[in-house]
Image (cartoon, rainbow, N blue to C red; front, side, top):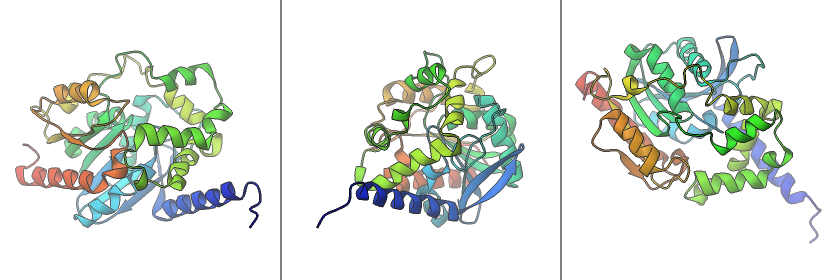
Length: 307
């Protein structure tokens, strides 16, 4: 049987649109700090706020949310401005502190008085900014594959963002995104079909062809006064909430032996939990991540917020 040229890509596009439509149907719209955004949630009980990084969105946590709900928690992940379904206003402050201010406004808009917090990637510094503003509202903190401080040189994506105001056509290539996510983000390829990888690309590029994503990348090293000193947020001996570290041990970007150990040193903890995963450990280790977060949250309840 003859298959028309391009038929395979059309079929893949249809599956991608179905994945995105399913994700959208599982969430709701809200507004915070003048920005319309999207939140995906499930479950009842104590809230668990899940903050995504780059180049992700609330889509990152689509597997973790139902796992946490099944363990008796209300799990929520919202899109940061410039990513996912969130608005992408040109005048927004896309630096870490601007995104942190939005996250602080978002938990207010979502009526979250006290909550457990899970952070990942650039969502780490964003979440640390949130914890700085609302220290007394954090019930527990779970840190996954992130950076405590951006002290070194810029990441490759930052260099590209500084050189251009528009996403080059090759950066919007499905093939490039598939290679990037499978080699850097996902250890078990069978856990994430191609249509879901392509959904990451479309949700990052969004309605402005990735312009806001580039603004975020340009702002990673340009926060006033640097990224701040987050030791007061992470130091498990001094904060009023328990802290834990979970790391994808095969992460080729934020490597365990450098970034993981740096985060461990900042917390003052004696150990972290390493999982067989790459950067996006929430993809192929969702049940394990959810179980660790849930156990940590329950411990916070038993100890009144301290270890």
